[in-house]
Image 1: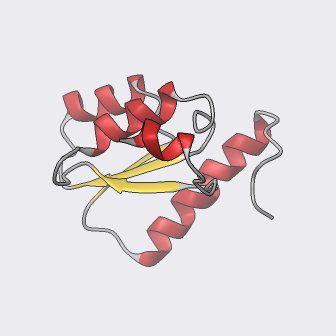
Image 2: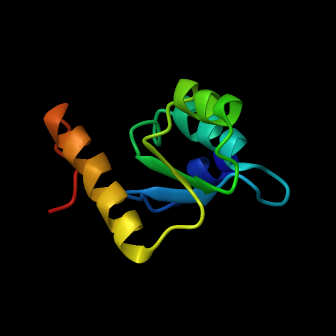
Length: 99
């Protein structure tokens, strides 16, 4: 699915925010597909979920997640996590971080 979208005229995104629990494809599978495609492999991915279990977190980290948040959380929590992700990207020399 993502491959077909990438072959078309898909706009490039600065951040992907996804839940683990989604119909048709879970967030971990989406993360794996995003990381496997050269056009999207550097896009930060923030996963939100109700599942804070260690195996799920480890799988997300091993798949290249940029950030992970367990529900419930507030708007400020999301804002801080996104800023943290972009700070880390900037420190790694990635110039694609938004201003």
